[in-house]
Length: 256
Figure 1 (cartoon, rainbow, N blue to C red):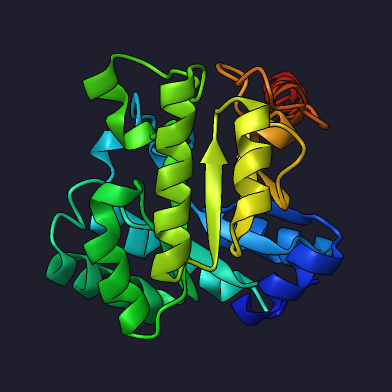
Figure 2: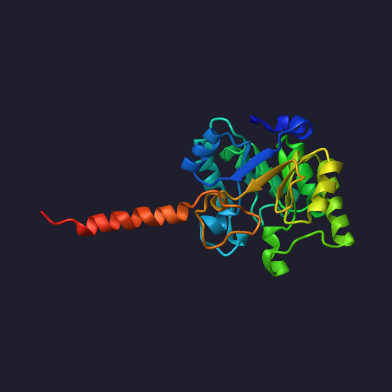
């Protein structure tokens, strides 16, 4: 189990791979902490699986601060990464200001999307002593601009751009980086060439760790599940069963 981000380098060298899950609320945080997960990510994926938005682009800093505070109340050990939502890091100054707000809310590290194009923001965050986690490959905050979720690194040019992004983040001081929805061979190449830990999601098994959206893992969000996510429970069906049983019990009772 990790207790802080300074241990990432040792885990990259000696293993085992990092087990990372998203989290958005107090009771789930307590359970995941007790289960022994290595890192928690309060992701802007909460826009879809908690707030019912079509994508992450409607998530605000206020949303993120609210959920980071809830998760922080539930953990006693596991470090928390918090996402900087769209439009919250357009300049280095804004990025640092909002990163500091997430740390004050209870996170121990922050994450934002992008590579070469956001290096000034990354340097501002790292320079202030805040652990930073990158995110390259498929960028959910770009889904509207790109017209959907598209796997990255399919061409030599695309693979080279991803490697350039990863090397730039590594040089800027990122302690880890999420590699999302990219060709597995590209993710493996990146993992071998950077000092930071790579955390894959839909990027093959060669990364230094894996992250999943917890509702995908638990089967509590049945309306959509990405093809790479294996549900290991069926909370949705069990919820329906319990609620229907309760309704039947209430409605079958005879008034006094």
